[in-house]
Image (cartoon, rainbow, N blue to C red; front, side, top):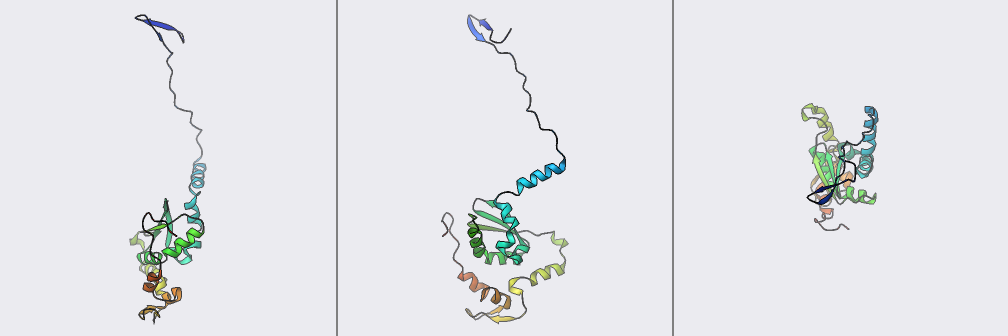
Length: 185
């Protein structure tokens, strides 16, 4: 039977088409691994998260950038990894300034989600490395204590040099975070 032939079944005409063999689409020829990795890397480093990663120290500052990095962007929320707890606190205290810098740079980021992630397994961290990292913290940048002029409490000199007052007064001077669903300024 050819294509378009009529076959009668109980007097009714039925059109019968020849069977078609389904084949998978033609695959491109294999490429060397180096070419594949280069293609993936180029695709991965486009868009806002690539720009954030490449210029993170510009917005976070060199000290915070050394201990944090952007991980992901979910809508208007930037997920930031921070390597140690005391640096997590430092990023938390700087979150409003950081958001302001990111927004001024054209990012539509309204929220930061901070996650503590060790840069290497904790068992592999040398005690001296941990101590050195802690000594670089803004609250510990210089030995000795001074008095905060706002609240009259003993305050590390590093905090006074950075903000002009203690970290607690700094936190109180920051505007409250926007409520979910509320448009920021």
